[in-house]
Image (tube, rainbow, N blue to C red; front, side, top):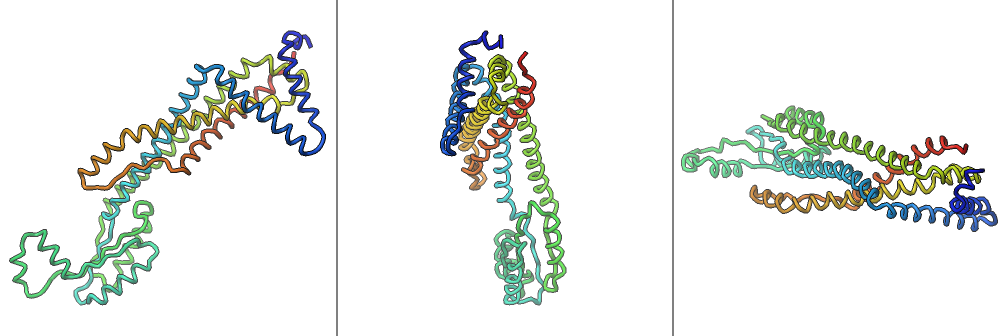
Length: 335
């Protein structure tokens, strides 16, 4: 008990909090109000401790925010890359050159049948007349083509598959089924181009996942180490609380809320960092897209993605704090 006498004011405050917790009897409503008040006190007192050391808190939150911004920023890059490649999916279309004896009416019926396939996104029929007009416009042999008595070009059906950049096996099966049709004379698709797009998107997605895992672990350990140092700085307070009968849960509560504030504030700062960077890049990217006659617009965080970002950063910080507290508080015992 000598340790209590060394810190009379601190011991008196801790005794009062512990006594309030232990005496929260009475009705269920009274206990609920006492529980609410204790958590509110721990929530705001932990925030006050962060503001009482502004330099240390700013450095910690800044480091965590940069780590979270790197992971979430790379995620946005992948999302925008997927948007860009979605515009290139027309290069993955399957061209079906029908047999010469197939009429336009039969070709349209066959196209309607293809549209019912759940793996098909869009179908377009190019008649012989349309094909000839396009050939005249691009080839430059208009006068020579007019001499022909019969249009030699076949009817073409252009098929745009769904999820062409994701499921290569389904795309291959779809292509093989079209080749086996009795109405199709020749089927064509650039598989090499499809594979390149699939490889780019898959690699970027995997990179985003790995980076998020590594930086998530960094947030986890940084917050854990911050809480460990906080426990070390408040060692006497923890020991006094144990001497007057405080439970481990009571002792851990303000530290957990400190981890909560660090994680949530870091997530908010990370969101602002990524958003400001995207705003800086937006005009340049849209100008570049305009030069290539495109309509590409940078995507920002949606409301759901923003909530996920804040919830993830907060959860990592709280879990990291809890694990450190679970070990450290047990090790601190009164002499």
